[in-house]
Length: 131
Image 1 (spheres, rainbow, N blue to C red):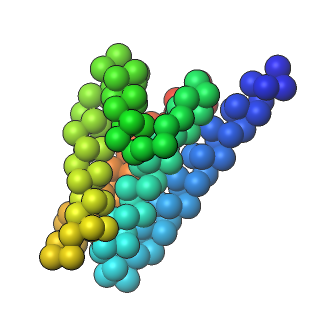
Image 2: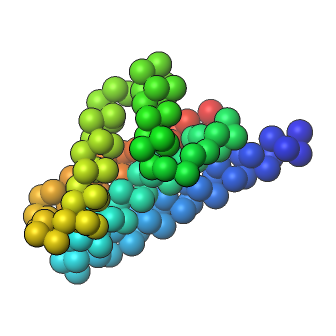
């Protein structure tokens, strides 16, 4: 029983981290720091996914492995809606462009979409963890 409390607590810790990332994304967005906002919005998504994986005691070092596992075990099985999968993939691409492509200039609209995706997933994950 104590181990379950620890696992649930760890999952909730990761979700709180996702919420902090989202708050940072919103702050950066409001201050027109779109590169930083995209990065933080993606990490909100990433940490929300890792909150779900914590319940299974599953973890990976590489982002692509975390995303692939989530897609395989939670999207394809429709535990989470399939519509979120494409949004997560797009968020990852925008984050990579924001972080690594010196010529990438994100728009206000792209950044807003990133933040909305993060909010949507955090809400889904919060509902899932509370079941």
